[in-house]
Length: 573
Image (tube, rainbow, N blue to C red; front, top):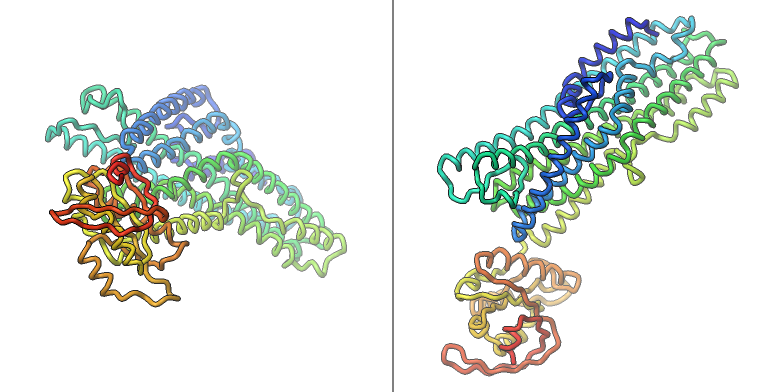
């Protein structure tokens, strides 16, 4: 099809579409071009970055331990740690497979699959037209590859710059105002126990910054190199399929003599087989290593959605950081699935291309080949995610729907409109010592039983012991006569210990009550140093007399099983 000089010119032209990706791969010690001694020596840089990034994982682990009570810090640490792990896996894989990847990229740049089309080694009159249309198809493919790479590189550089610049700016500000006991903010969140008291001192701050900057560095650049190469292979496969469809369309053209049409059609079949062989090699390179990307990205997406739901109003800074993690992890998954879907869609069109040619006016052998290819091409080609799924938009939508289901369930449990009656937050602050919150799941119409609880163990007596009690209610089920709203409001004004959700009261919704109580206790009593949460269920009779405010109160019997600390057990004896 092309002479050696033309192939060399084509190789150089196509390199221009990929040059930014290739140069970025050099920056992390990976060579996707012709091997030379200098380029192969870049493996040392690759190994060095792997070691420093692996060591930086310690900072994520220690921050999780240090902030074990802070879900926001834990979520950030897990997200950055997983992103680092994914990048380390890609770096190690490139270290082992870069020669294989470079050889495959060389085939793509030189259009070796297209060079092998047998038609161009014949004297068919259609050769010139085919060559022109193939050039147009592949030019469009390379422009698409270029646009994807530039956009992906820009996105990764933007995210990386935000982390680097934010960390430097925040640390410079605190150094300027002289903040005491300040631990520096690192590009990827983390803490080093042995340098915890060093602050911004030289060289401890610089060492910490470098270690965590290394993990951020490979997270961005390994994504550009490894993922960008996949985009190139996938889009090139799309181009090969489009060329095949165009060739099949001309199989019954007047430009192809009738006596040569079987030979022409066999050339189309051979091109299809070479295309499948090329795509299988790409799939073999990426299918297992992509599993780590998808699994860890799924975990990151889940954590991000959770963090965003609890930080949407209370902590804008955390919300912004979570959006950055979402864009970093989510965009990689979207890119894989989008390009995989493009390829699957083109593969699905091949069967129709064979059917739509004028096969019904051709010889029996021609019809037989068409029939065999229609059967074979009904099997759509997909890039695999190990042995578990495919890289398609259906897989991505499954990700979204699964995350959305968790988010919707979480909203039902933690939504800001969950409560219709609120306990006053003063219940947690009016006592000097608060050891625990007692939550009692109560049916909305059992006001008599709630009065029995209050009489047997009044709130004032519980307060003296370091405890407070809250009754968890729901709405009256639709099949029953609802309790009058003013009765509940009167009970709330009198005792101030009701918390009601806007869901129906049923055994199925019992978990909603528990989560409602946990959420209220964690938010409203967060400032108090309470350490336990106790729950009443049904089954034990208690009858007591307690003196509150100088008046004697007789306890009416009620049934409850109490899970308590030793202090409460002693108080109830």
